[in-house]
Structures are given as C-alpha cells and as structure tokens.
Image (tube, rainbow, N blue to C red; front, side, top):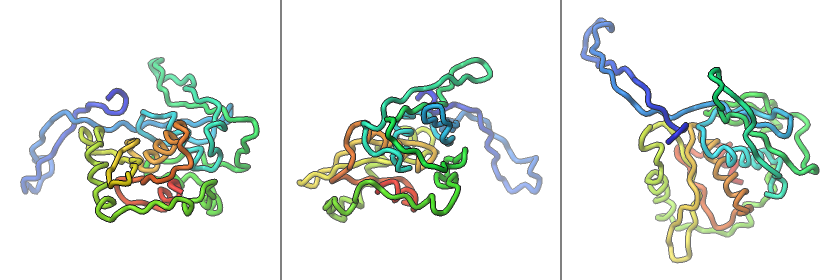
Length: 236
C-alpha cells in the first residue's frame, strides 16, 4: 500500500504472572502499521496549516479542508493543487507539502488557524471559540432524504467491509459516502481511510468537490467511531 502502511518489528511481552517485569517472555514479530506524517497546506505562498495524516488522497484532503473551513465551496474556486518540493534527510521527495492556488476573488480568513493540528483533533488548531463556529454555504435542510432505519443500521458494517487499510493495520478510521436508491439499494460512492477521523471526512468532502457533486443531496456520510461535533459540522 505504498506510503500508507509500513512493516515494523514489534515486541510483545507476555504477562505470565511473574512479579519481575524483566522476566516476562518476549516475542518478536513483524507487524503492519498505519503511517502518520505531517502535511503542510499552503495557499499560494502562504503556509496555512499543518496536519498529521495518513499519506494518500492528499489533494482530496486539502480540497476538503478548504471546504470545511468555509474558504471555498465550488470547484471553480480551486484553480490547482500540486506537491511542492520537500525532501527528507536522504534527499528523497516526501510529498508532504501541497500548494493550493485559489481564484483571485477567494477571500482568506483574516486570522487563520494555529500552525499545527493533530490527527486526533482538527479544531484543536483553531485560535478562538468564535472561529469554531463556521457557517456552511449549503443548507442541509434543503435535502429531503429519508433513510429507513434498517438501512441506516447496516451502513457501519458496509463501511467496515470496504476498509482495506484497516484490514491490515487495525489502526485507521474511515468515512464513506453512500447513495440510497429508491428501491432500498445501497451504493458506496467514495471511501477514504486515515489515522484521523476528521481527515477521512475531509478527504471524502474534497473528493465530492473535485467530482463536482457539491452540494450533496440524497447521500449519507457514514463514519467509523463517534460522530463528533466537528464531523457533523464538516458534513453540513
């Protein structure tokens, strides 16, 4: 899976009741771990944010992040996305810096986020309580979708069945966009996995923007784990 996962040697200590921890039997094995690396998001020459994420679908992540921040809401406002030069100590391209070029009339926030956000918390980088209260450019109330309870209850399992990275690591979250047909059928349109739930959602939102599907209608966003305030906010 490329940069998404890594194989590492791990040590497993077997608790056998011994009072001395140094005497615990140790087993050595190779495990597959989910990768977590920083991604710097630039808007033009401006360094806008750094987030910890699982590499992969980075353009979707950046596009979705800009939508979630209320900066853009149409694909026309996003002129281009590209990886910038960023090398590790061995001179190898890291692909950890993405530059977004926006249309000249796109207004940037007067005061942005703090420089760093973690994979476990997206709004942790927000520098004030007022900045947390973002308004959507779309109205969720305009979507009259009604989903039968038994179909809604089946979505977590359907999402889990499609999680290839979780199958080998057991260490990533997922967000999936489902279409519910008139005859009760369920179609998974997009699934994204990441160590951070908010990143997985941003990747799905960014995919939808780049596919010119916004505003979404008649669709359900299913997430692994709890649907926190921030995830509900992003879905709106």
